[in-house]
View (cartoon, helix red, strand yellow):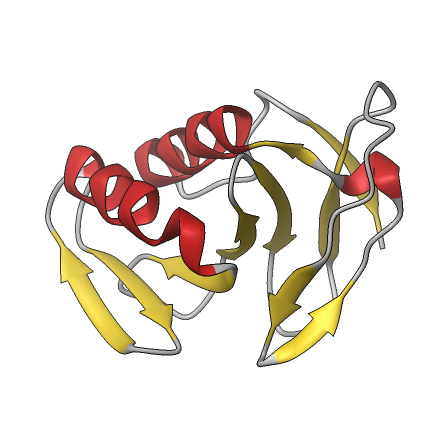
Length: 123
């Protein structure tokens, strides 16, 4: 991993290791907030909405609109997230566990590509 930059409603934070990024995300998981993660360049990036033990992940390949949303056909629980300060309730099949989101973030920080550890739906 090179430099990882996380943006939240509390500001931007720079990290040098994936472990430090994961610790930060676990600490803010109860805040029901959205977290943007990228490398030194703006794209690709991931946006993670977290509410307790649940998450939803968006992957943005570029600024031309190539993006994907996490997919989990086993989830049946509705979860409300806050994204950009507003309530957002995605379809239930977009909700994954926080642990799966953490695996996704770790893989993203290792490759800066769309993670393969979860399923995706193209938007």
